[in-house]
Length: 225
Image (cartoon, rainbow, N blue to C red; front, top):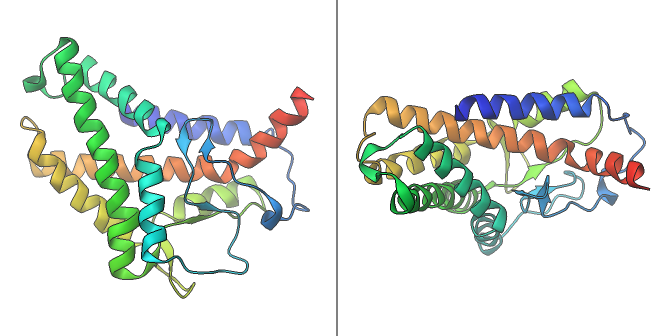
């Protein structure tokens, strides 16, 4: 069910963006990124462009991870996934009712926090990689879609050069391994791989939302006016 939700979310974003006029004349360096995409998805690590690139310090990387981890949007998302997992009885040992939901929520929120710190702070600091998403902001919607998804596998190091996104893949792999310790009913290699795929899919969907969110904001703003 969760995977279907991710796929549907990506399709809805692309469909919505097909109605957005191309604004190739816009200057991405002048756009102010909001802290949340769709008022829910934390957006602290998005940068309007790679122009005038400046690397982050280790402290700045940990601040981004902290802001993402403890944003109210993360709490809402954890609550949603906790409800979905309880509804499907994903981990029978957690039980049902309020106590069961509390266990599902705690593990879901912990998973988000661990994943954020591993992919945005710990491994980017160790590997000298930049955890930010650099928005393209120009070109065709399909080109931008491919760019957004591609940033899961390619990122920039602290010198601004492109390289494989070890922080995303290795960081989420470590986070999935840690998660196995508190999911007593789901500790197989297949479960770990599924959890890794889910997290990478979530991050890819988040990248698509971050890429197109400013366009949708402008469109909604014009309609409101």
